[in-house]
Image (cartoon, rainbow, N blue to C red; front, side, top):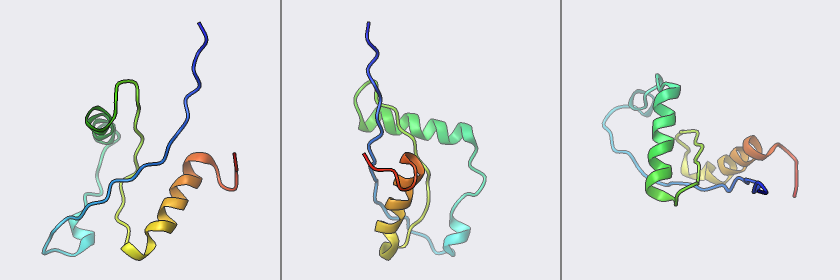
Length: 84
């Protein structure tokens, strides 16, 4: 049986969080690899069909820097400067 090649497709979730604290004090900095994996599993199960895996890197991005952040994430996933 021939194994099908996997490929990565960038996606984004856009949201807001509401707080009366400074941003730096609103975000956990102690997220464990196990918690991150659980979050990835939840996203995979609720947003995608069976067999789709999700990899995420949570961060807060100022609106005016969103496009640049997506490009940096693509470089991290696919390798900087590589083209198809």
